[in-house]
Image (cartoon, rainbow, N blue to C red; front, side, top):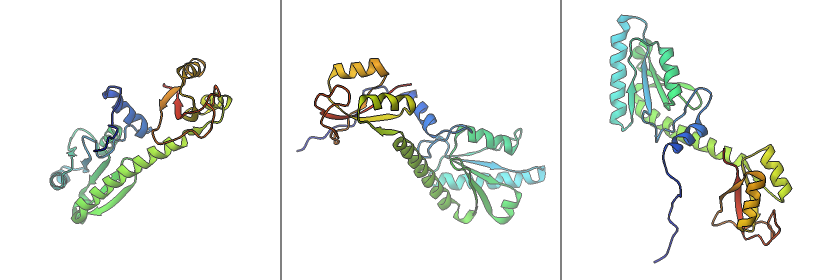
Length: 231
């Protein structure tokens, strides 16, 4: 038998996760919810401007919803008659639904639909015969795009620190995560916190210090630590 570290945290998992999700992925248009955790993965908006088209388009929209639900997706048909399509588009973008399906009279005739991504706001036309495959592929791509975007942002905001003066300068000018060789002593961390407001955020298990001496007190460095301020 071998021993392995468990995956654990020392803080409560609650609404802070929702806040983090909104901060990491959201934009000026509102929330962007990753498909795998989105309560509604696909919203279908019927588009019509006459009573004559309303019934046909709405029936097609509900048929499309049934197909997507049968494929295991979480789907909502927004068939409210008191809101315009533009109003609905803005509302669902604000709520962060990953994918919007637009169906109008011409789409019904052509047996197609328009798919609109929340993350990139791109639109594509797809034939209804390939709807399930294309929708699932887009949701997978949206998930991958959001993850890559977040990872790139994290990498861009990590800085390697050589000494304490650089530490203070980078913290003030750039913020983010400061990676430094550190002694691990409490008095050293306390001084750093009192003088800069930064504290240790994580000490990776599989990374060794890059320098022999602590970046602040010059005692022997025993850890590679990530420092940051909380906001």
